Image (cartoon, rainbow, N blue to C red; front, top):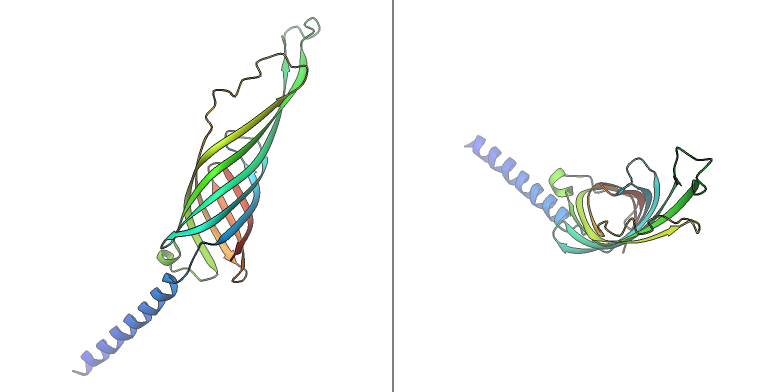
Length: 193
C-alpha cells in the first residue's frame, strides 16, 4: 500500500508538471512579428553570391503555425562577350556587354514551429516553412547590345522555396533569426509586437 501511495504521488506530480509545461508552451504566440533580414540569394544563380533584403510580417493562424506575407529584393549583374570569339579582331561586334537583373519576390510564407515537440528553451524557436509567390523581374541591357533582349521571357515567375530556421530571443520584443532556404537565406532581426 505504501508503494502504491508513492507511485500515485509521483504520477500525479509528473502529470501536474506536464500540464503546466503544456499550458506554458500552448500560450506561446509566434505571430505579430516583423522579420527583417539580409543575406545571400541563389534562386536560379547557383555559384553566385547575390545580396538580398527580405521582410515579412507573421500572423498567428493556428497552434504553432503562422502565415507571413513577404517582400524581397535582390539584383544580379553578369558580363559576357557578344560576337564571334574566334575572330575578335575581325568581328566589330565582338565586345564585352553586361546586363543587370533585379528580382522582387512577393508572396506568403507558412511556418510551423517545433518548440513544443523539441521541448525547446523559451529563448529559442525552431521552425520549418514553405514560401509561395511570384517573381517580378526587371532586366536592363547595355545600350549597344543588339542580341536577344527577351532571354528571360520564358522563365517561370513562380517562386517556391522551403525553409528551416531558428530564432534566439534577446528579449520579449526582439530576437535574432537565421533562415536557411532553397532560394534565399537570411540573417536578421525579429521584432515582436
